[in-house]
Length: 290
Length: 347
Image (tube, rainbow over all chains, first blue to last red; front, side, top):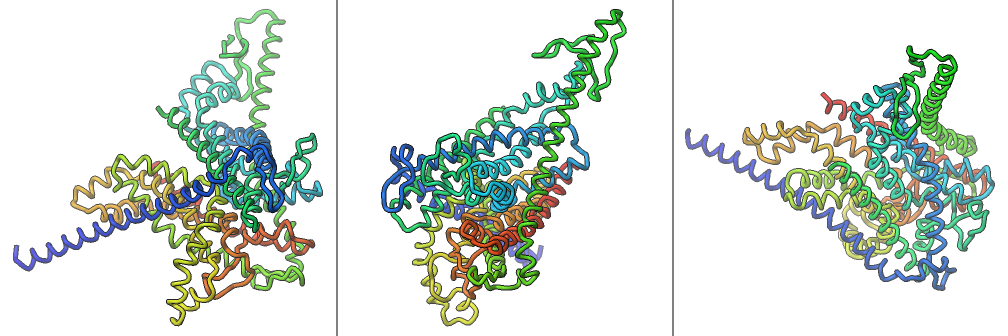
């Protein structure tokens, strides 16, 4: 090799090494950059949230401006509406997911449903709020807990459909064939074999759906609106209903210090709920894999 | 020909289509009728179950159709009043009942562009770090952290942005930058003026932090589909990590990465709470990115419950329709790309 040739190849080698180092540095920086922001957010949330935590959060209702209080009615409203949303949304999602995975895997209808479901899954939740407003609030003539629950249910369905379908597709076909060969009608195959085999995955999906709706704010703003008092009589769902995210929004954007503190406490509660639910979901998923 | 089926009574065989297999050994007519009757019931149960599944699947379509119809119907009054001029006018005056969507559309697009410009490279960087560079011990914890953070509700980003980030940003970034660029022609317009902490740029930044974990999670999943033979072959030829990533892995899963980014863009466009807190809610297009603005979702969230008058409300619903159409197009492209990617994986 001539000296010149060896020098160019050395230059090339050097340049490639340099490019590689720059690349490694840049992506490490990206990772640090991302983690730093996320630590800031969680740290800020912990600092401001923990200092605002107190037992009265769970026993007292949201205060009028300038006085102290808790978040009891908001927490109660959120739990009630989420519960109804899950009770309504889960069966529909479960059956629709079952249809996609068991009955019409490759059909044209299944293709359309799958496509539309994935769009709904990431469609802006505020648009869902407008839809429920037109559908429920306008018809009823007033804001109500039912409307809030309906909006949340519409958000639950696509999440459950997607996970149910994915989990059912993981069930080996041999199980279905064996059950059919024993003479089980298809609905028995589905109910007693595939649903059972995919149970952990389906529950994971429901947990993720709960995690998703527990922080949803936009669709509740003009369906359930908010309520500064308790309304735990029979007609409670027929009245406007307080919810944790909506209270956070109103309190945080208002000018009062006490309300800011409550907003932070609420934000911490929501984040803790979401994190616990996601970790539970993840544990379930892992348990199934092993 | 009976079958003992877990948890249920003895039932005769039916095929999945509901036809019965008759038992040739049967002689007693009464027993036969009883069995045919049970078989018919089982067949009917099967049919019912199938119909329930079908109905649920159709319910998903019905919800989608309902969303579109209700938005279209709700926006008819505004459309009659303003026509297509709605999307090209900036004026937004509830008192005079003049509504134009240009400022919210501008805000939505600009915040999303800022978010994407920051989050796509950083998100892909994080994904590359996680798949290739990260020490094995840290890989799982960081990966899990990223995924968990993707699930944190947007209102948390909003409240943090409003109370913590915006004041800091105003003091330490906006003011120095605004003073520094004040006399430079283009930059002075883009980043000059009075600073408030909240504004279009802040909203874009918060959005970028929010979609960051999402992009990293999708990209990481996609990068993991690259067959290790491909990587090993290129390493074997003497390629550096950078060359393997840039010339082998990324081209291999190009469609998936772009699809994931589009999915994130769909989220950014429709994101409401994180933006509403920090964008400032001013219905005007300011030349400076630091100035307060508004976005489609922020306008709806802020004004809908206070909107008096059918025209005002209808204008907001028309904004919602515009948002839905924009996100639909973006999300549809994303879905098609990711589907294609999945198909390619099967080959």
